[in-house]
Length: 315
Image (cartoon, rainbow, N blue to C red; front, side):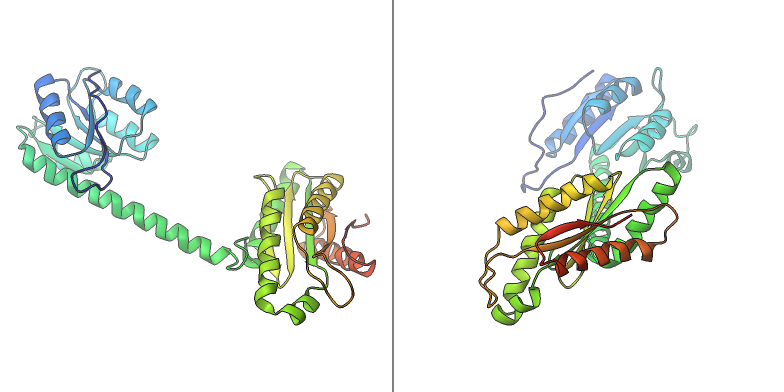
């Protein structure tokens, strides 16, 4: 494989540039295109066949492939179909057989552009830049859509998921329990004497307590667990594939760490921000309201016993 040294992937204006792979069995054409693209400020490599190109793509990300159609072994059309299925990569097709291959056929295979040989290198650069601009716009649109999606399911203050997303996710997890016979546990956490703290120090200071609790919860969870601000100073944690005794361990870890990281004096003599936690393991056959109610009632029982403790719902 012809692989040139990786040049700086930034152009003269300092903006990030794409990585491009040229695939053509004719060395003169292949090297001419590669050198032109390099001189334009892009990182560029070259491969002499479709098979070599695929081996290269397995090792390195490429934003754009420029490929001839007729080559020994894998054709440019076959390469295009594989690339579009396996990689986030655009393709420009080039060919010297304009009578045998049509623009529409190249587009149907997944190509973004179709250029006839002999290639005018300046025209190639113009089309290349157009494809890359469209690629960048699509990426920006995806990022914006993802950001908007995050805003609709995320609590502004704590950056945990919000109640709306909780109801969506807990139903998915309950369905998995039924389908795969997995276990599922739920934690319902509430800050003890939070109203008294807000009345004493103000809501801005109260918000800092909630933000810190959100941080502590994140620090104590596995990747498969999810946490939610359920409302006010109440928080939910979903623990997939977790039995009740394991969930109690998680609850105690969160409770102890939160208590250790906060301190505020109140009129009743308390000096630490503490939590009451209700823990419930899902019972097959119970509905969502019953599942949440058991955790909620257990949390209030913990509060009734003086707070700063985790209790397991009775089976």
